[in-house]
Image (cartoon, rainbow, N blue to C red; front, side):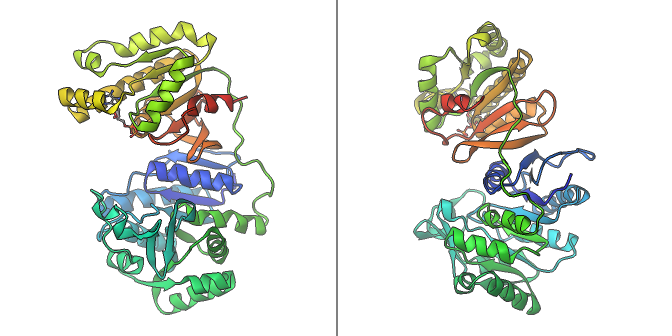
Amino acid sequence: MSLLLGCIADDFTGATDLAGTLVRAGMRTVQMIDVPAPGTVLDDVDAIVIALKSRTIPPAEAIEKSLAALEWLRANGCQQYFFKYCSTFDSTDEGNIGPVGEALLAALDSDFTIACPAFPRNNRTICKGYLFAGDVLLNESGMQDHPLTPMRDPNLVRVLDRQTQGAVGLVDYDTVRRGAIETRAAFDTLRADGKSFAIVDALDEDDLMKIGEACADMKLITGGSGIAIGLPENFRRGGLLEAGITADSLPKIDGYAAVLSGSCSRATNAQVALMAETCPSFQIDPLALAKGDDVASAAIDWATPKLADGPVLIYATAEPDAVRQIQAQLGVDEAGALVENAMATIARGLVDAGVWRLIVAGGETSGAVVGALNVPGLRIGPEIDPGVPWTASLGDPELLLALKSGNFGTPDFFTKALGMLP
Ligand code: ADP
């Protein structure tokens, strides 16, 4: 195994986003759910993204988890490391971007890195150190009211400075646009000046490519998934990454197909309604679950004889009014937990019945299903819709999984996804 890029992401969907970006840029990528067990061997992989849940936990815990992830990646001989956080720099004055970045730097015996959350494809740009979300500054974007990480200062040099012991500098777009050599020289100047981080401006993907090239020899890079687009080219240039490989190919896995939906987002409601027109469907009633009915067994018994004839749809998805009524009766958390547990049990039953092509709608629902199926990681395959790839689970049995968070995907997402499989 020759791993090139080892990434640590501070949340699950951010990890998927980064993994998809790397695959599109030509690196075969696996996303691991938490730190892999020692001795886990992965073949034919160029990049690994370890998904943590460390964005809003206390800084000391975030450091501990991130260092454990780094240790695993180092034991597997990565050439370069990447700490991925949100493109809106979600953090507080306590962390966790600064403290985790500094801990990783120290563990790698390095004294300098960049911090670049720019993601022009998603309208996140940085100009003179100020982060924009679309046309407005970060602190006017709605992020100022985020319940856990309110972002009230758009100047990332100041924001990161408050979170770090070391000093923070800026490489502005004037320098970036002059090219990779000038950008690298600016890094050297800041480093000689005692700075340990550089916020780097980026307005478009061309800037990200130049910054990527300037970071070719940097042990640790920190940023959003945007900055990752410039990194694979360094490995190709160095002869470490084959050009022209199909990075998104997945093993062929036969088996029955099913869609499990626990998302009540608007996009999912439309997708479920469309799918139910053409495929057998079973609705989960949270009130029946609350009464103690064995709805999961009923769903599995309903589905099993139908699987040989084509995909089935099992859903708890409901319109906002219905969801509100259920939540009023059961409580938001109780309703959520009941449905998630049922979905997890149903997923296990379906896999036992031979469903090895499974689409799951809902972020929390996906987490519950992946946990129930003991999936340690996912090899990232072709993109179905922006932000949602087909994946192949590692472990036994191998499954094809598409995990869709709520508002992603076109109305025909489910049939489109199943139609992509050979
Ligand atoms: P999304 O990605 O759309 O936010 P999630 O799976 O993350 O979807 O969250 C949806 C939550 O709603 C889950 O906890 C799920 O169990 C719960 N849920 C699903 N269906 C219902 C329903 N009919 N009534 C109440 N809660 C529901």
